[in-house]
Length: 110
Length: 112
Image (cartoon, rainbow over all chains, first blue to last red; front, top):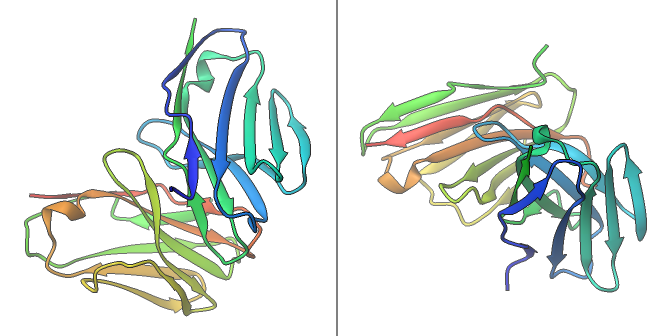
């Protein structure tokens, strides 16, 4: 079983719609959770982090964490063509290491 | 000002050669990392240094040798390059175990 799994995608959504990205993790002791965005040919950049159960909102992005279900998600509201990228879920087990999922590629159709 | 920088940006070389990639961060972080991203875009940690001390070594062939001369620099030397080493190598830095990591622009290595 992979440490961090994401829905494989690609995910295609129309402009203005909500894009929903899912991520599950295997280590119940995981402490912190991150969503990175990676444009083609570029480096990953952080868009959200979440430590506690519940929702965390930042602009058009909402991260949701459920530690009991070992599940973290990212919602992108009012999706824009500029949101087209690969989204990487990452999990930190308090051991200096980020474990990444394979990423979900999102395409926003104009 | 570039937070995490890497050189070179592109590296094309022949099998069997030895090459180095350099990384520098000006964020004042005390932990630095090397990641490898393969052709399927899977990002996997290779090494981590905290205050110049190696703390993570993730089952990487010993042809790969990291070196951290100080907290702001982490270099990666690769001996006897193989075709399978072709990938994008990202350097990253961070402050503490639960803080975010900031990535450099990547070094695209192609072994022919």
